[in-house]
Image (tube, rainbow, N blue to C red):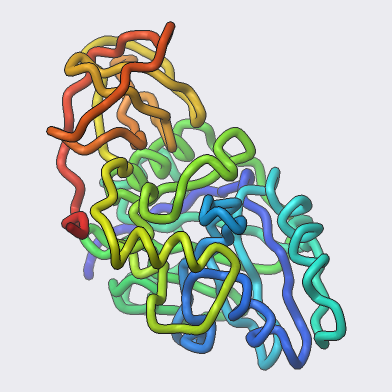
Length: 304
C-alpha cells in the first residue's frame, strides 16, 4: 500500500477495561463470540445480549496484556454495560472499569476514504494486514484492522480523547455503513436479535462455543429457521436526516428501524436499517413516516 493515510478522532467511542485471571473465562460466558480466540495479534467483534437474544451492545475486544482486555463501544453504553456485567462477576477474579477518559480512539484510512481527516503519523506498510481483526502494537499505539476492501483501522492509545472533526467523523460513519457494520446505541439497545444486525455474517457469533446469555434464542434462529428481518443498506432519494432508532416505511411497504445513518454532502442519507428481507411478509407500522429510499448492496452475503 503506497497511499497517504488520514486519521480522525472517534470521541464518541469509549473503553471498558476487563482485567484479572478469569477475564477471558468470564467474558466467554457473557458474549456471543469465542473469546479464547482473542490474542495480541487478533481482535474480535462480539455481541452482548440479554436472555431474549437481543443485543445490548456490540463490543470490539482487544488484548492489551495477559488477563487485561479493552472492550470498545459507544461511550454512552460503557457505564450501563459495566454495571450489567458486574452483576455476574460473583467470585470470579475479574475487575471492570470505565477507562474511556484514559484512552484515545481514532480512525485511520486512506485519504480517499477519510478526506477531511488529518494526516496520520503511521506509514501504510507498518499497519497490520488488511484482514479484519488483525492487530499490531506500534510505538505505544495499538492498530486494529476493521475493514478490508478498502482497508481501514482503529488506532488505540493512552491519552485523553480528542475532539472529533464532525465532517471526518461522518465520513467514517459512512464507511462503516458501506461495510455493513452495525452499531448499537442507547436508542437501539435491546431492540434487535443478533442475526438482525448480521452478526452471523460478520464473524461475531461462535455457534460451536459453550453457553452464554442469549445463546438459546440466537442458536434457534440459526439452526431452525430463516431470519426474516435483517440489517440492510439504503440511500434516500431526497434530502433527509435520520438517526439510530428512527422508524419509517419504505416505498414497498416494509417497515424499518434505523441502525446507523450518515448524511451525504447533498443532504441525502445513507443508512443501515433492520427491515424484512425483500419478498418477506411485512406489517406496516401505523403512523410511521414514508421514506423514499433505494436499496443498496452489502459487501457480504447474508446467511440463508
